[in-house]
Amino acid sequence: MTHVPRGRFVTVEGQDGAGKTTNLSVIRDTLESSGIHVVQTREPGGTPWGEALRDLVLNRHDIDIAPIAELLTIFAARAQHIHQVIEPALSSGKWVLCDRFTDATYAYQGGGRGISLDTIALLEDTVQGKLKPDLTLLFDIDIDTSNARARQRSEADRFESEQDSFKQAVRTQYLKLAKQNPQRVKVIDASRPLEQVVRAVRSQVNDFIKAVIGE
Ligand code: Z5A
Image (cartoon, rainbow, N blue to C red; front, side, top):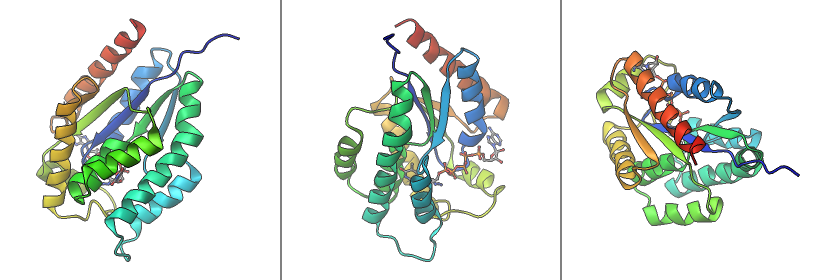
């Protein structure tokens, strides 16, 4: 039987309105034009069951959801996502491009909600084992610009409705993660005009592809 090299796991992160969705197609096109098969997915969600949990986490403004319940729901969706989508794709040699993953949990549930990072790390180990992203693009933007961009869209979810202090804590935690993991997490200054952001994204993804091919 021929050995299929394991695929790579690429994630995108950042505050709401930072431009992740806009740039996902840029990342995907850059990978595909190098002949890479990409499975694009998102968190929370990525499976029918996970999408049902996503709806509960993002849209139930009528319930005072306990932070720990929110955290466990996100990890429940993630466990199913890994089992049903991420691991099978990586094992069959495809690359996975995921709109948010566990860095978002550290940023939103850790930084934003104030849950202990040790608790998150324990769940991360339990649910993911050794699985971690190979490359993360962090779209960083100041809160005023992110709010202005987010206002261009439809109804706010439970996180977009939070105070600026919550959003600032999310940003701070994301930047801490980037500092702690400089090899994996590449910060993109997303406050710049879109053409410049797109150029920076293409350059980071192409560098990563070259590094993988050269391995
Ligand atoms: N969440 C969590 O709490 N814990 C977890 O573990 C996980 C997630 C995994 C859903 O995320 C929520 O789940 C998220 C955290 C929580 N909540 N929030 N907030 P999501 O990714 O689905 O939702 P989002 O963050 O709100 O993403 P979004 O709405 O798709 O925003 P975006 O992708 O970052 O931005 P965009 O849609 O690409 O751009 C916004 C607007 O700005 C749009 O009109 C663009 O045309 C414009 N734009 C983009 N880039 C530029 C530039 N460079 N210049 C000018 N205008 C621009």
